[in-house]
Length: 463
Image (cartoon, rainbow, N blue to C red; front, side, top):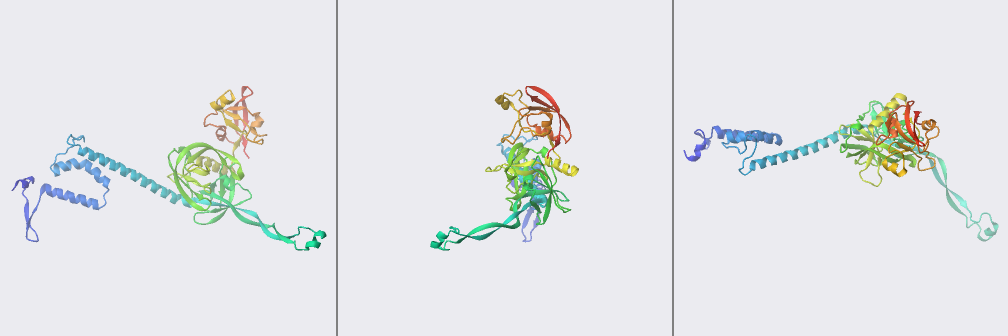
């Protein structure tokens, strides 16, 4: 036995091969190594996850090197590398980096799968809304025209040579034409649909709902919100797929969201993905027939929303609607807004309970008071709301006959508190009033002509 043979613990046996030659079958440790190698190869071929194999080696590697390979590990019991070159420590760092990369890839793939599942579930409940209206039908006809009229003096020179026909137009009945469109989503299996008020603002128009499977249904407008850009439609169909409503109060900036809608009124159920870019934004949006509408507390997103997407859902990765897409900033990129779904819940509850949307109303136009406004206008306080008129002569500070008018509030008064709570920061007068119902009596503290006073105001229904 030479020195090389001494690495084996026992004497190798000899067998005769098919060719007649003698070969060694190594026992004990070398045989164990061979079995382990074959086992690992079989595991790899069987599709064992690489990460699992790496983690297993990290646990059993030193034992394998010592007991199978006959090699002392360069890592002690506390997994601290020795000073012999640091190769094992570098390998562990490489393995950690590899595992981190794989975890990142897994998260990306998992989110992609979530988005696909959300779209698959929500798409059947997202609808297109077609707006049609009877438009006067015009027809063309021709009339004879004589530049000289019946003047005999000119006719004796020119005769009838200057008579010619001029085209004219006249109405010949009416015809239905498609004049607009938008999006919506089904929230109840019996055909209750949420959309924007500006999509269905024309009371003389007709509305048709087109579902994702191509079916058309005549729709009835159940309610238009007098305060917010929300409306409810109803179609006569049972067993419809629905979009579940989530909780918009739990949203966080950076959260992934998905928008679905009838992009440009042409590309049905277009899907886009983005994030929540901001919360509790206050914007002025162009409404129907050109009027501006104040929207408060809306969600900002960079998900692509286009004309025609109005009324479609903004979804979280659970497939729940957390917003209703409402507006974009013209000329900008990736700036769009959605109404919080919790505002929509109140509308649905009101319609189901009263058959209409009941909104309490006080009847004033105002701006929030802050330190800058106080210093600029030498106001006595830096909180509350200043009662002011709008940009036009018809935008009165206090609506005649309103609850505020009946209580004695006038232009330039400052409303300080509602039932003992200061109006400041995000707590606006509109948000304070929204916490009450029609008929509730409020204690309202105001600053009026140099002194503070408390009034009692009974809220009325906003028409």
